[in-house]
Image 1 (spheres, helix red, strand yellow):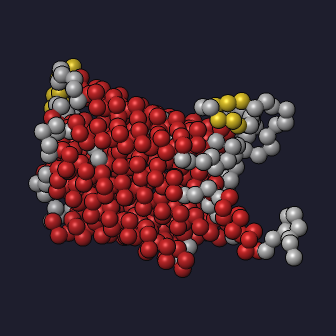
Image 2 (tube, helix red, strand yellow):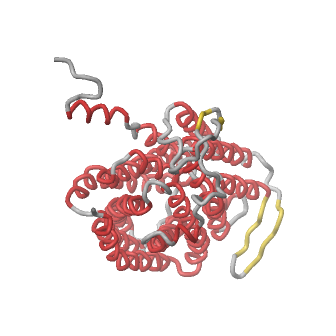
Image 3 (cartoon, helix red, strand yellow):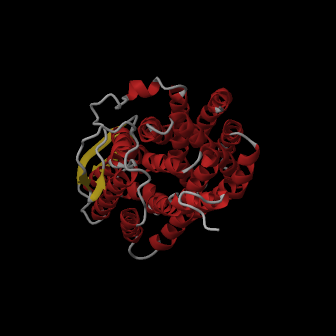
Length: 448
């Protein structure tokens, strides 16, 4: 007996629904490539800055350019992704990244002309040279168009059911950390050639070009318009060559600004935690390369090995460990426990002992691997469907604001306090641990 139109067995209907869902693979590939492009430069960036005349303060400052300008671009791009679709804004963001790496590469061929000679008791002594100025511009441009993380998070929330959010954000984190595994390893291999830093940066350009291709031709649109109640009678127009329906304009009543977003239930509290987490992380990310050079006497290759080990452990935790843990424990519980482990990692770095440094990598992987995907899952659930991109965009701004502070202070604090900088980072994450107990109440409010 043939089934009539619209009929079908439950199994067939379920399989049909699964076929209609966009695959995570293209998004994961784009995320991996984006991380790979940056991580291939990360191990030698501090050495490059010093070679071009800078010091620890300049290294922290140049690292802060990306989050500083993401603070401006993140909310705009997040909002645009709600209006025009995630794919188009991902493409815009990736094109900005590609252009920024081309400029970064060009800076390596410029003469080291001194623009400013600084002698300061606070900032230290350094030369501000022409190539450094261009590097500042390149990182600023990447940050201004750097809405890829917030838009990718919104995209994932679009295509994932709430029960699968934690595991899928874990997969996103895995793709990120795979980039951090491959990138430093490539950097170590390429930087020892006669071409020095040129080959790794050229690699970042090529990698970004591949990412642009994937977004343009392999990433499907998750939804044409995230906003509801689209006005009738609007004409269809093209943006970046793709058809989309007209959404309400940014001036309409469905255009929440920061004040409106902060009034959403629990969002302001989550943004506060977002800020503290990023602040603690970026103290570490700036201070650790300096710590590795000064205290551990590491080379570029040794630093690359460490980041590769750290990222490999993160992949393991965010893969099989998180997949099993998320079935037994709630997002809030995993976030709380993860913060406790993460804070302990920073304390283990203080003595500058090689064994404790690698032991800290295990605590970092376990803590971050459990905490961060769980935190992202919870904030995406609280954001709801309609303003996912907008909320994620403002969240990235809070993260950017914390990153600016952490990246600048990280270099300054390490120059002043040495390994005690990690004590400050640890105390910040322990504060997040205590504040995260309130997340259990937020989570209960989400249940029907």
